[in-house]
Amino acid sequence: MTTRIDARFAELARQGRSAFVTFLMAGDPDPKTSLDIVRALPQAGADIIEIGMPFTDPMADGPSIQAAGLRALKAGMTLKKTLELVRAFRDNDNVTPLVLMGYYNPIYIYGVDQFLGDAKAAGVDGLIIVDLPPEEDSELCLPAMQAGLNFIRLATPTTDDKRLPAVLANTSGFVYYVSITGITGSAGADSSAVGEAVARIKRHTKLPVCVGFGIRTPEAARAIAENANGAVVGTALVDALRASLDAEGRATAKTVTAVADLVASLAQGVRGARQAAE
Image (tube, rainbow, N blue to C red; front, side):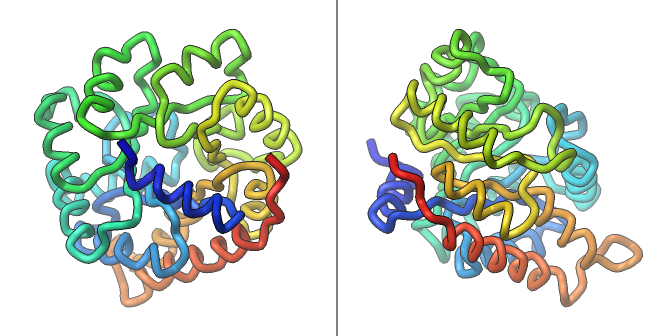
C-alpha cells in the first residue's frame, strides 16, 4: 500500500529536497475561514498539511496552539466537522497529504472503528496521536494501519536507543522528531543537535524524519531542512492567524493571506536547503 504521504516523500526525494509540513488547528478561527486557509496552503508551498483536532485538555501544546483549539471549539468545531473540512478540501485537491494531529480522547468518544472508516472516506492519510504510547498500539495504531492510514509516531530528545525501536515498530509515513524537551512554541530548535538526533534515528529506520517544535523563521526552517527530510511549522502560523483577527477574535480580510504569505516565506527557506548526503 502506497499512501499519499509515501508518494509525496518519494517525489521530494527525486527532487532532492525536504518537505515543508504545516500545522493549523481545524476550525480556527471559524470553520469556513479554516477551510479557506487549508485550501490556500498547497499553492503557498506546503507539501504536507497537519490539521489539529481541537481538544479541551491538550498536553503537548503551548499557549498559542491551546488558544487556537479553544477558538475553534468556541466556533463550534467538532471532530465530525474536522472530517467534513478534510472532505471539502478533497473536493479540489486529491494529492496533498493530510494528517490529523491531536489526542485520543475525542477519537475514543467518536468510536475508533467509526472514526477510522470516516477518516479514510473523507481523505485523511495519517494520524499523529501524541498521548498513545507504543504499549497501546492495539487501541488505535494497529486498527489505523489496517484501515490504510499511516500512524506517525513522535520521537523526542529523551527517546534513547533502548526506547527507539519500540517507538518505530509500527510507525509509518514518517517519524516526527520533536526538537525540544517542552511544549510547542516554547523554545527554538538547535539545528546542530537536531542533525545528530536525526542521524541517530535514521540508523534505526528507513522512514523519512521530519522535525517540528521551535521553527519560526525561513532561516530556521532552512537549517532544519538541511538535516532532516522535513521541517514542521505550527506555532508561527497559528500566531500569524491570531494577529490577523479583529478585537473580538473574528477573521478579517487579512486572515487567509496572513497565513499563506508566511507559509510561502517559510517554504522558500525549506527549498533553499542544501540536502545532506544520505
